[in-house]
Amino acid sequence: MTAPTPAPTPAPTPAQLAAIPAERIPALLQAMPKAELHLHIEGSLEPERIFALAQRNGVSLPYPSVEALRAACAFTDLQSFLDIYYAGASVLLTEQDFHDMAWDYLIKAQADHVVHVEVFFDPQTHTARGVPFEVVIRGLKSACDRAERELGVSAALIMCFLRHLSGDDASRTLDEALPFREMFIGVGLDSSERGHPPEKFARVFARCRELGLHLVAHAGEEGPPAYIESALDVLRVERIDHGVRCLEDPALVARLARDGVPLTVCPLSNVKLCVFPDLAHHNLKALLAAGLKVTLNSDDPAYFGGYINQNYLDTFAALKLDVVAAYTLARNSLEASFVSEARKAAWVDDLNRVFRAFAQASAN
Ligand code: ADE
Ligand code: ZN
Image (cartoon, rainbow, N blue to C red):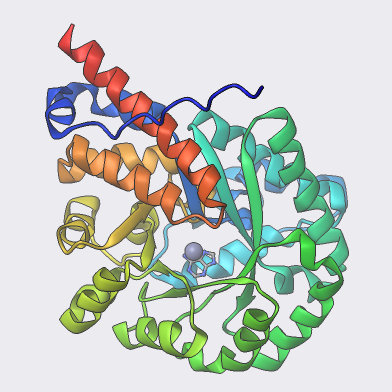
């Protein structure tokens, strides 16, 4: 006879959420289980690791020291960041390098109570330097598998196409990736947004769709709301990465809300890349108020001043967000992930238990 499955933990009631005092919010943000859905693994390379890999591989860098690299990280826009980000990634040569980079990140994700992460990687940044696709994906995948076994963190890979390159280049990258189809769950679109509309990638995304891959794209970070619309209509993506500029188009906001399209928002990134002057002027609160399915993420944490919990902590402090927002954002992140409904339900159950425990402790 099989044991009966335990009844699911109900979501915390409004009264329970209201019982948790504001001073408990930082601890709650740390403790709550969450998914990270917008994380470029090359953007998790800390300067110390970049210099250690440069030495290990005999690669010379355009910066004399860790301090000089850190000092160069005063970005004015997306492109000024990407120039440094691609230089940092040039130290990655071997399968072990890719494994080590991902493992560094996954340990930090576990400490932040990330239960699931969908990791972006940029194969063209590496294959253009002569690093075989197979080296990149095997190194990353072995770290993801190890995280599941040793850390209890679920990790999946999303291959991004660089939008400053051509659609044909993206198609050739997809050809190279096909023998490893089972090692990644989806494709995305990143790099320089302005002047590179989603339409450039219509053909390759159509192929990916036929292959049953999940589809996401950066849109509306620096680019106009029209790019969000064409990412949905032309590329047929399931999530929008960033998407913060959607608020400039009320009809688009209504559509995103109606269809429950998740936005993977990255507040520290947006400030570092001058999309907003500071966190207090970030539009996250307005996005939530518009009923959008917002998630919080770190983007390129080594370059932008913090990992996922730092994004939560700093944003909640700057915008004075409440316990309801904490629950909503964590739950959105779990629900917007590309895992089975059963796995989502199990994590939502854990989330409900954490919030109920905080409410209970506050009542005592
Ligand atoms: N690649 C790494 N981080 C990115 C970002 N924030 N936008 C576009 N491409 C990226
Ligand atoms: Zn990004």
